[in-house]
Amino acid sequence: MNKAKLNGRTVLELNSNLFKALNSINSGRFFTVTFMKANGEIRVMNCRKGVKAFVNGNGKSFNDIDYNLVTVWDAVKRAYRSFKWHKIININADGVHYYNSRYFA
Image (cartoon, rainbow, N blue to C red; front, top):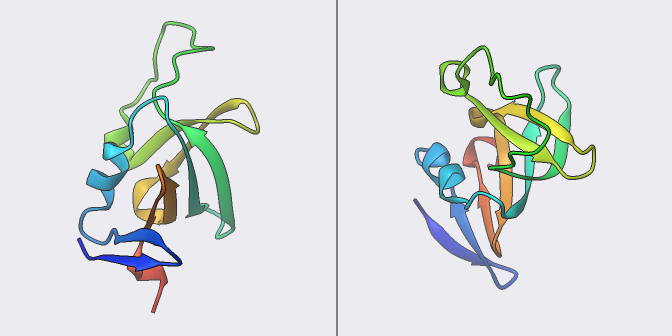
């Protein structure tokens, strides 16, 4: 994973370690993710992982890993949302800016 400074912030390239970097974000910590939705729109979301509120106890009928999904709690919409981890454009978490160089020349 390449590491550099941009405007005084640590910047990490996510190409091959995208999933690992995403999993390193602690549950319960807020982060901002920019990703491409299935319809091609770009979405920016303030969210966090590991939220257990508002679940009915039955769980999902599928496993996120099988569909390359990450499920998070959207802090603005106050609801669970999922996105495909390989569609992430960048993540800001704990003062570190992770980016997917696939989207940057």
